[in-house]
Image (cartoon, rainbow, N blue to C red; front, side, top):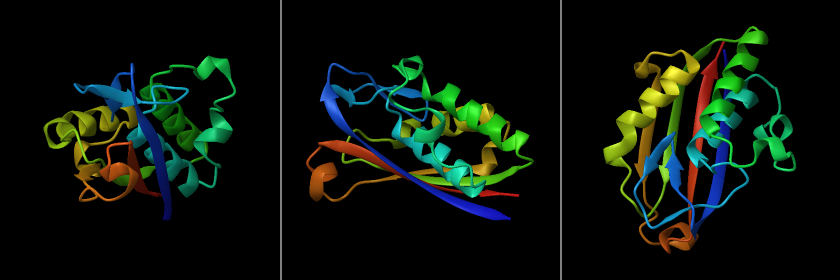
Length: 155
């Protein structure tokens, strides 16, 4: 068994869609980034790659590569799943937390779990997604950004 952890953060900006866990969430701002800036999927990708000792998302999908501009992060997650399979690894489970003052994530969590499970060929019970706030403290509490952290167990 191997464990990996991942963390990602992006600034909230006007003029972008908010996509988290592959779900487009109605909100006045979205996350800035080279891709769709899906902090949850990026954290999960890093956790999986780290568990397999395969580096991080920036090594495999660099933001300097125009091929990844505005890319749907679900395609990156599927590619990470393939890389783990080719490496002889099997994903046991994923546990992740979204850290956002707003918008509320709870109404979207079931769809996020469904997307992640489908993209990685897992049962939904193998994917746990939680959300919390920072009680209005720091850059997240001021509504300047959203973060996510994840752990993944593989064998």
